[in-house]
Length: 198
Ligand SMILES: Cc1cc2nc3c(=O)[nH]c(=O)nc-3n(C[C@H](O)[C@H](O)[C@H](O)COP(=O)(O)O)c2cc1C
Image (cartoon, rainbow, N blue to C red):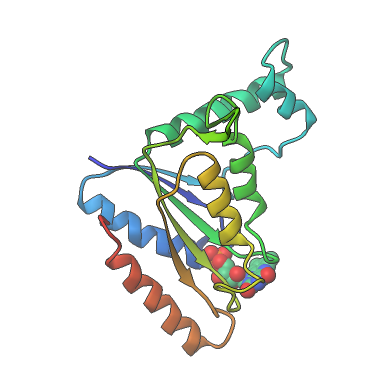
């Protein structure tokens, strides 16, 4: 049975296009009785990585309450990730990047000895049995252009922790008129319908 971890990161609540596309994908997995863990990172925000939290994640000794809480959250996020066969990431583009809320999740799961390690040959990702689907939504059109630093960044960090099987669903030009938006959302929806295993 597939174990799915889905991360929503839109700040637009019920108006979010990426969250709606994730819901469609999760409905497909529901029909296959998959186990689904859904995290709305905007509704339940994670702490911002700062000096105290970075120290806690490296040397968990004599921690204050804030550090203990952040470390427990980091452990929980990593446990969820290790359990997942499939990681679904909702990645709306805000100011040419991923939402802060999603970056906060990444900052909590990127932990030496847990999700990656450094060897004499370089870094090795430790999340080896998980594949990923990224659903990205944008007002403009950026696919394969220099203005898209979201997908290269996400693929880079996923590869760093060991996830190299990554599919991307693009819903672009959503601010370029209602007809274009509807057409591109429909295309993304069709792409989700025929995703491998979904
Ligand atoms: C604060 C903010 C910043 C945005 N920045 C960009 C941007 O840099 N480039 C772009 O193409 N679209 C941008 N957009 C448009 C969003 O990418 C678009 O509305 C998308 O549907 C958001 O996904 P969501 O509906 O799941 O939140 C921005 C939207 C917001 C609200």
